[in-house]
Each structure stands twice: as structure tokens, then as C-alpha cells.
Length: 157
Image 1 (cartoon, rainbow, N blue to C red):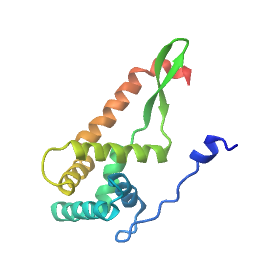
Image 2: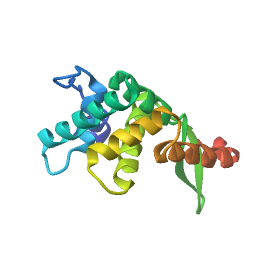
Image 3: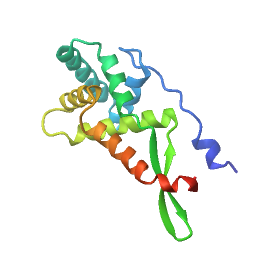
């Protein structure tokens, strides 16, 4: 019988996307993906990247990297049950997990934004995150605040 950990902890090899030749772009596309429509997800992201280039006159890849780096958390809280009560224990984040969290939060913030197309919303959110504002950044700060508040339970790790 296979142990679950040996199956789930295997690192996936992420290819790079066709246009920017970047893995981060592909990770983002895979998270935008709904109902298996990958070409639509690529279309959305490439439109957003084009708009970022027009608005900021900067390389959209560097804006994307800066946004993800800005949203990536250093610590998160994990729930741990100790003798009948549950504690939120602050845990440092592994870089790969942090990047995955950052991408998830960025897309959640994009989807929450009002109106217009997903391409416009995501380009706005990415530019905001690169400027250190926006909902994804707020989520990271909130997470850090919760971890700071629960520092007393760090010994339960």
C-alpha cells in the first residue's frame, strides 16, 4: 500500500508558458483555469499583461514578479488541537507554498473586484499589488497580524 505522503508531496514539474517562457505565468494560468478551458485562461492573462505594459510602460513580467513577491506571506497560522481546544499556531512558510498562496490570494482579489472583464480586473490587481496596495496585500497583512497575535502558541509546533 502506498502512503499518501509519498504520492502527494511529489513536486510537480511546471512548464513555462509559450509567449513569456515563464513558469510563474503558467502557474497563474493554471489557477485562473475553470472547466478545463486553458486557452481562455491564457487569453485572459495575456490581455492583462498587455494592459499592464500599456499602463505602466514596464515589462509586465517584472510587474507580475513584484506583485507575487509583495503578496507572498512569511508566516501563516495552522490550526492545532491540543487537549480539547484548538490553537492557531504561527508557522513559517516554505517558499513554494508561499508563492502558491500569493497566486491564490491575487486571483481571489481579482474575482472580488467589481465589473468589467477578468483581464481588466487582474491587470488592475497586479498593478496594485506591485505598488503595495490592493486586496491581496491586505490579505497578507491580515495573515501576518493574526500570526503575530498568536505568537504565544508558537511552542505547540
